[in-house]
Length: 374
Length: 83
Ligand SMILES: [Zn+2]
Image (tube, rainbow over all chains, first blue to last red; front, side, top):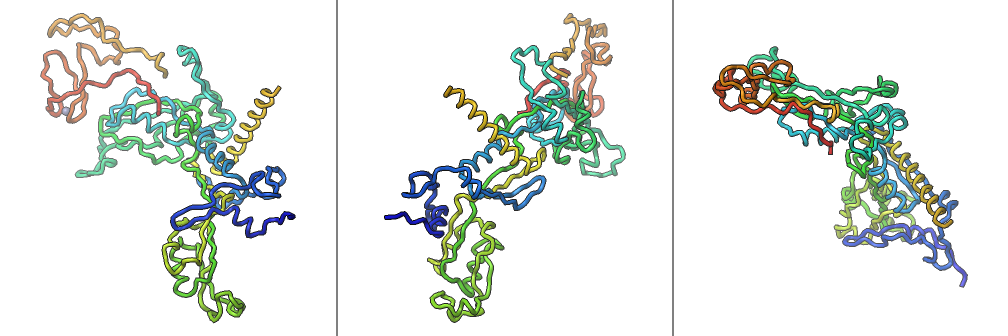
């Protein structure tokens, strides 16, 4: 029997994860060799190039949303994990506390300082600054800090009474000078060539100047210096360039049989706003036999407008009147990414860097494999 | 400044000072000249003022009269990992 190529519906069915009232079906990828008799599903770079595409939905400095369509979950997940754990950023690593008489303990203060995200000149951060490595000989540690691997910060704050405060004032920020210590009080001390890369708009400074570090009362003081180093998220979350990097699969909503009138309005309310729209039944549809629209010309019907905004809550599956009229699912090869930058990188640059990183890793592995076979 | 560069302030010879004589030798203390005459500073528990105390003076804040005084924090630099 000659092989029949799969129909469009069959191809669609193959790459849709079924979402039912209680179960999720068809979850695994099936486009691999020997799975479908007579079809060649071996991986092919040309086929990949033909089918793969990237669509941007939002691209702001701190938040980017885009779709990768036509790739496997392993690749999409690799990008997600690389963005979280392998893209280097600069963060506070060591805190030298000269004085801290505030109520916040040294250890906690140091931890808080480490978590503050910083920004600075792109060229300086990504090209000029290199890794700092702890020297094998611990006594040589003071000879391991250079302008290209360590950034020096200083924080000196002392709280005093404010003589100009109005009598009866109760607001600590007005009653005292420097009652609150904010991230903007941190001072960058350029060393060597750093002033060339980090000056003007490129100066190293907290992304959010209003982060509250500690609260002080008169007589209390915080005086410390900090060393920043480059690091990766797999070492400590403070080095992760993203607040979140996640993906979800594209929702699929298929209306199998007409949903009309009041039912249509109720159906639309089962989904987030903008997912389902209401359109009047056209004359052409009403005249078509067996369409389910006969005699309903002008009535409102439910149509799928923007499935991407759906949260796949399955609310519509709970109602008797929609039984058998709707099918929910997710597109298995359509990944909607959301990348939220902490501010050191542009959010889209994080993804591009992740692609470059995966490529480099693959090339390194290739070299190793070639060495192994030789 | 790194940990190794830091000079540990020295509290002096360790000899017992003459009682009431005020002849306590501060030795190599580098507390910028405020330690003459065997004065040790404490922090008032109520008003946070620095209270100089000598031997035999009552343990009491000279500003507000509070009787709870705290030892000052170490003058040494303390190093922490921001983790
Ligand atoms: Zn007092």
